[in-house]
Length: 488
Image (tube, rainbow, N blue to C red):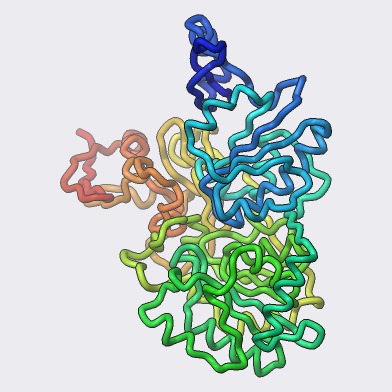
């Protein structure tokens, strides 16, 4: 990655900055030389031998995302022990960096123009803001490994970091004692009522049922969250739970929530900030995964016991409100989240301390030629379950690396691809249309249901080899219906 700075101003500073990454710029120096010839400055990030001051930009991210960079700060400090590290982060997520010994300064309120005006004052500038969403590798690589690879660091520990002051603990202990919680006697279980999106949230009625069941088992249950993010038409009514269960939704700020979790026995909730906080504090957690594979997040977690019941379209890595496999998900959770039951959670609680945490790595990428043109040139397109999808660089076929068990008739194996394409009418999903999608992660409707997805080019290749020709008939949003006939 390169930091491109504009020409110098009257004060001798370069103004205007952008971050550039890609083979076109980094592997050929034409653009670098051209820019420098007209007064621009191109600095290769993370290869500065004389590092005296470091800036890490991690903006527009959630609480869990902010915790992701705490091991990164540790790694940077170990690599550059004498260099102060300043972080530009957004509020309130920046509060997780409070009291962090690896960050010299955290700036959470600043305009973008301010960054541009001072970026020249640093020897190293790392921009990690949301970069994972732009990389296909994030569908099969743990998030911490991605950051370390991006910044070329090797932290001594991958555990997230949180530091709590004693006065913070004293204040929360006093507060919860007034609502009937005694930390010397009660075994506190914190249930996070929602995620930041409806697609990753658990049904509210199940949260209520789980709270009641845990209360009967002798736990002191506390429900936390943001009242404005309860994704239910009758959220308030459904949360009218027995008085023995403590409802703290909307009652805690972030630092108070962090402190409460530090005093707890267990944290339960959807794939959101709660279990990251718990791991940083050495507290057991049971995160409920739906759109993401646990391996992508909790590979290094030692106190985490995830529940994950993937569907053929999982993981889709969708960050939007809507489940991509359904047309309207504005008020309900995704099918893979609804598959997790209260009994699943209760059974997992019994396993804690008995069954070791088993976070399975996705199947390794293997060599496989394109089943149409036999080219070996391909790139990973996405992953669904244990299937990797590749895009052939020659004929643009989207194909998988192996066969999976399924009862759906429309799944077609790459091995039999020529058998399915013969004379007569033929309808296929248009891979070119899928490739045009701005987000690869939203292709769950097709990836996971088909072993290959044809492009025009790959279909033409098959027809040429089978002595067929194509007569196009109809086209809709994502499908083509064609008629295949023998060549004269």
